[in-house]
Image 1 (cartoon, rainbow, N blue to C red):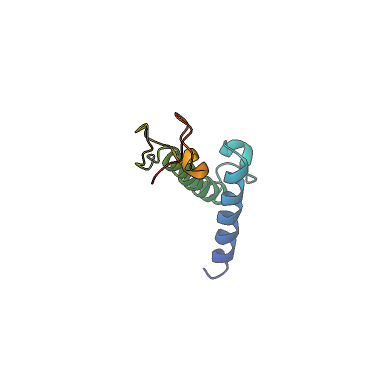
Image 2 (image 1 turned 120 degrees about the horizontal axis):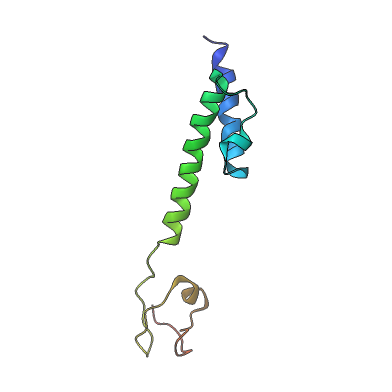
Length: 94
């Protein structure tokens, strides 16, 4: 049992690394299908891909911070970085 743990850790690490490079587990998996290694690789790969997709979706749906300028427009994050209203060009008052 002690010998299986490093092997599983290596498979899981390979799967997480592959998930950053590949979107398809079939192209990413270096192990023969049907083996325990392939099953564990697929399980870890899919979990890592799901975490990546959740992180992307979360970042894409962040609401704009409620700030206003003299024209009372709502501003997005990119405008806050410049401290300038995209609608009227005036400074943003956070």
